[in-house]
Length: 85
Length: 492
Ligand code: SF4
Ligand code: SF4
Ligand code: FES
Image 1 (cartoon, helix red, strand yellow):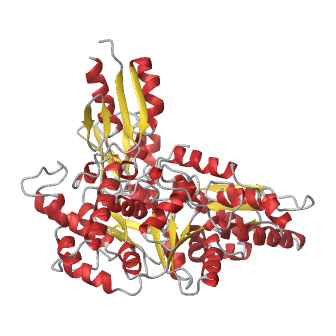
Image 2 (cartoon, rainbow over the protein chains, first blue to last red):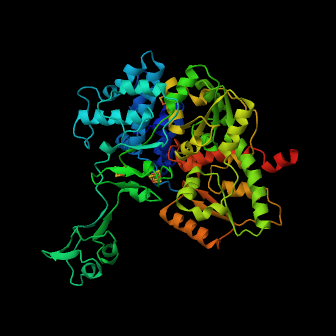
Image 3 (cartoon, helix red, strand yellow):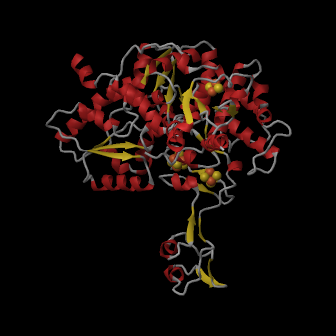
């Protein structure tokens, strides 16, 4: 696989309050762990929280095109590992 | 700095979700019914139950209890038969918030075993048997070649824990008991944690420490929503720590708060500037009169500690009022008809506000965050709007440990040397230290003692939203673009 894995941590207000504040560390730790195989960034509202009652599944993180609901550091790292397999 | 006491994320998520749902219910056309439905909406028929809970009914019962705290009532005092809809109705009619801001959800609390000393499988049944010999109460005997503790005789002293060469004996701690700096929370005979409100200083450490999220703040969100809905002139007083909480500029945050329906927003750093000036003058005067030391008086948790547990400290505590006090005074002077709401990083300010007629309500940062979610406000997309009165860099830095002492120091004349001592968070140990200083009437480490109940300062408060490090970075950026209080004093 040649393409980089892209990780987008939603730092929109809903996700931030629901817990992505605690995911900000990923922006530092992921490059340390995976080097340039993974590209990680904090992004504005992904638009997922405003659909119906989906705020309750925030925080959201996108790993390539897959959406991780109620994201935690562990879930995100696991998803990255899957992609890199 | 490691914030090892931060609330486990999953229970914060639950608490915040309930707040959002309550706010949405309030803003809907049927507050009572939509409140009643919250536990069902969160755990619909056939939904998964987390493995630490027995069944969906228990899950819903617990969510109902959490919603009771969100409505501002005591969970302990509410009868099981009362419907959430009735409570919603009662909340809307309430005139004043409850006296004590904390409540314990005992049904969530069962999982914790009472604190005790426990012999693990690592016990080798060694020949030396230091544990048997050390125990002053004769509680340990050897059965089948292993140590056994007789719970009737054990006094939890922990001596055996220290002497075992295999570290085979462990003390099982109860997180809330362990975190409480003043011994105000303990499991009762039923295994439920109970707060002794005569001792409690409202520091919120138990709420942060409990892995089951069992300790709740009684929210005043419905009270505030009610005044906003009624079109009252509701004014927000935003404590410095708030500027580290949401991913946006301070000026955008002001606009976001206006969008919630507030008539105006004041920075509490403005009141902090009054505190700094008054406290610097007071420190100078005290030292001239020969005082050994003085402590700060801005932290509500610390003030309650002195009042309830260290009366000997009273003469050494500054008489200067808190930033919240001065800010509320200014706001009410400029807007006599306003309803004032303090935006707080911690639960202790709710206690302080009850004693101050100029502060009508207190909301914490989780509640503000939930309100923004409910209205779909994206702070980073808000316009920028300036504060009418600009606070100083030092005032805006009050929320960082060491910041208050530093501010006071800035305004002291050279001939008055301050040697700050920073108490970065109340623990059982730091409470012992403070008692010692008070009793001896001196502190060998310095003469200006700054006390913050929370580690890291207000940014480490129990109801903050952002993690400590990024919050500190954001606040520091704001501080760095602000003018020093020295210039403010010069300009008069
Ligand atoms: S930490 Fe305290 S409040 Fe939380 S479950 Fe254990 S005993 Fe109960
Ligand atoms: S709020 Fe603080 S003082 Fe009160 S019970 Fe909890 S930890 Fe103890
Ligand atoms: S804030 Fe993350 S999806 Fe909207």
